Image 1 (cartoon, rainbow, N blue to C red):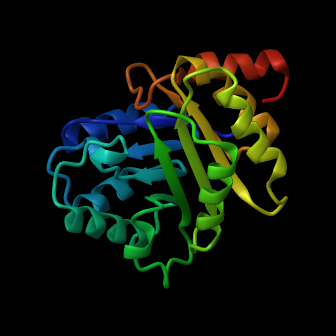
Image 2: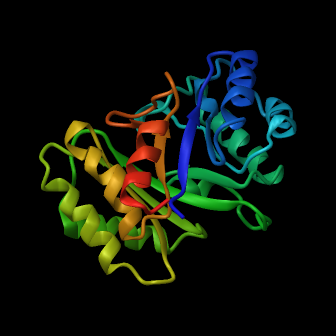
Image 3: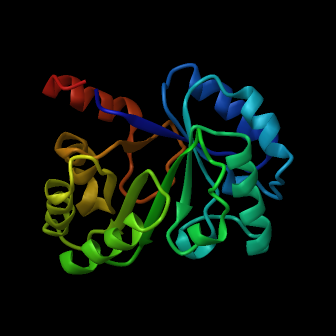
Length: 223
């Protein structure tokens, strides 16, 4: 069964909650991009958690990693820590930030350690080195999202998947128009999940709309 996470956004808490309610009626796995919410506070997470009916990935991305959180880094880390304490299903934490978070008591949440490059796809050797750094963290899942400037960049990510240990859970994404194929093919090669937009909820270049992606897998008879 291919896992497809649909993105939930909202500029205000109320808008986010309304979008969450609407999307989770039709989608079984959600990515909660709470960094889109202006002035998001740790206390707001309890309200979001109570409104959840489906499994989720909570993401609070900072600007240099393609996100929209505009507050201080210490405040963003407090939000992520609160999400761990509230035991959201999955929590996405950047590789450069994961050592600043206390994961000692995180029993339920699956921690996704992520790396992003919005300009290029590094060499395969560099990608393997990044994955190696991730394996030294307490993360359960490793996510690598890079920008594809040419179609052959997708092959580096596919090679990562084919060479990973069977026990390792990885998400690989090539962003941009030339990386769209990775959003379809990677889960077929063992990527833990793929991301899709829902209506106007696109959060990364090259993201495919949920229904369109679902229909592709239906045509391939794999979902």
